[in-house]
Amino acid sequence: MGKHDFSARAVSPELMDLADVDEQKLLRTVRQFALLNRLFSSSRKLICRYFLDPLIREGKPSFSLLDIGAGGCDIPKWIVQHCRKHGISPRITCIDYDERMVAYARRQCVDFPEITIRHHDALHMQELGEFDYIYANNVLHHLDDCAISRIVQQAAAMAQRGYILNDIYRSRMAYWLYTLFAGLLLHRSFAVHDGRLSIRKGFVESDLRLYIRHACLGEEPRVIRERCFRILLVQIKCARGVMA
Image (cartoon, rainbow, N blue to C red; front, side, top):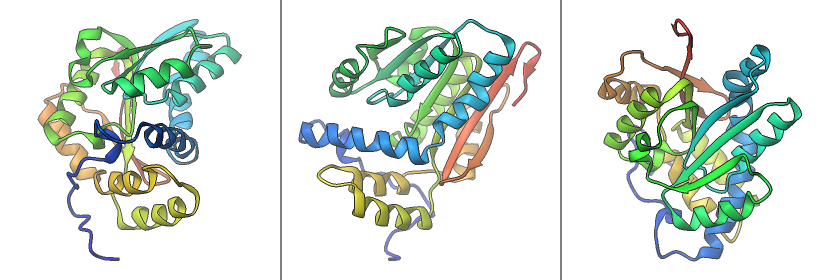
């Protein structure tokens, strides 16, 4: 059980990031990760806490959001459904560098005109202009250290109201708990292999603080630990500056 070193990030590519893998297994992995997002990513709670609840309190009728590496768009679809209940009109742009994911996501979002899906590299996302909010779930751990700092820098420049970069906390306990869960429930996909590797490619607080320093930001985001082995960078802005 102790063969993996959790003191530093793993660097191996995940199977789902490879161009020549079985597409049926890839899409099954995306669907299974949507379940994991709902159970463990804290995305819904975080988006409500930092984005949607303030908009509802302020009576804002609309907002724009960029979702980086949106995959199958399970999170953007939930945002739209939640906003419809509260009379808010979101304009959500989802980007992914993988054309297979873009094609799959477009099929999933035919009933969601609020969502636009684009094939775009997150390292050049500043080309897309400004958004009220930027969100990324389980994206940073796919990237190398220099790319992560660049994403943080661009998010800080582009997000007018704030951003959340939500990812995996690297720990031995998370690894073995996930091994048990995925081995029992997630089959015929890359979810067991890639999920375990994702935890080894995840972050501790000192990692994220290093990326913040390298990004040379005027106002630094907060590094926050959440339940279910989540760690995130959060910056919420207000008219007078930065409030979270």
